[in-house]
Length: 442
View (spheres, rainbow, N blue to C red):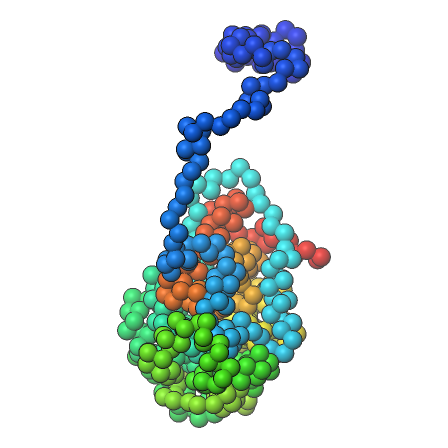
C-alpha cells in the first residue's frame, strides 16, 4: 500500500526514531553547531587516505594520457616540433581568417538535448561510400606528413586501421601507395589525387592506387594555384627542411625531432621520387590550373571505384559534380589553406543537404575543416553530414607522440562523441537530426 504525504500535512506521521534524530541530540537543538563543523586537530588516520603521492612519470605514454583534448595535443606538438613543420600544419592562408571562422562556426551552436532516453549503449558506427566505419570520422589527406614526425603516413594509416576508420593518402604524402597498403593491409585505404597537366602521370597514380586495394579516389579541385601560406614564406619552408642557422637553433631544444628526421629514410613522395625547393614551388608545379568538368568525366570513366570530389564550396558545384558521376562530395575549403575568406563548410552543409535531397541524390556528404572535438563531429552529422574527416586534429597527435599520439587523438574524439551523443539522448548516428542543433544568431 502506498501512502501519499502532502507537503505541510500536519497529519503526516512522524517517526523520529526511524530518522536517527534521537541518537543525535545536537541536531535536535535549535542553534547548536553540528559536530561536523566544529574544528579539531586532524588525526593521522584521517590524513592517510588522502596522501596518495604518485611517482612522477615522464614517458610518452603517460604524457599522452594527460591530454584530454585535441588542443592539449596541439600544445604538446608545438613543444616537440620545429617551428617550420609545426607552422606548416597549424597555419593557413593569408590572415588565416577562414580557419578561425571554421572553428568558430562549431562554437556558435547550441545543442538541444532530449531527456529520458535510454543511452546505456551508444553506437557510433556508420556506413560511408558503401562500407562500414566504426566511427563517423576518417583521416583526411595531408601532405609532407613524415616531415611533421618521422612515422608519418605509417602511423596514420595503422592507427586508422586499428580504429576501424578510413585513411586517405595524399598525392603529396611522404610514403608510397604501396608502402602504406603494406603497413595497414587490413585498413580501408583511400587515395587523394591532384590531377597533373601530364595525364599519363595521373593515370599511373590511379592504376597504382587500384592495384594497392584503394576503394575510393578523392580528387581535390580547390587548388588551381597555391594559397598564400604566409607562415611558410616567413619560415623559409623548404622540402626537405634546410639546415640554416635558424633551424639549428630551433633544433637545439627539440633534438628528438631532428634525431628522428636525420636517422630515417629521406622524405619521398607518392607521386615523385625527390624534390628540393620551396613548398609553394612544389605545389604550383603539381597543380593543374586548366581543370574542368571534362576532366571529372575522364576520371569517372577511368576509375571504377568510388569517386569523391574534395573542395566543394557552393551548392551549385555540389550538384554539378554529382551530375558528373561523383559518389560523394567533401565540403572543404582546404583547411583555410587556399582562399582566405572562403565559405565555411559547416555553414554550407544544410543547404547542400537540402539541394541533394531535392535532386533525389544519395551522394555522400563528407565535411572537413575546423573539427577539433568529437562534439564538432556530432554537430556536423546532426546538420546533415554523412561523414567527416580530420587533418590537423590527427597531425597534432602525430607530432605529440607518433603512432601513439594518433591513437590518442582518435580516442579523445571517440570519447567526446560518445559523451555528446549520450547527453543529447541519442544512441545511434541515424537518430541525429537538425533539431539537435541550433545555429546561434540564425
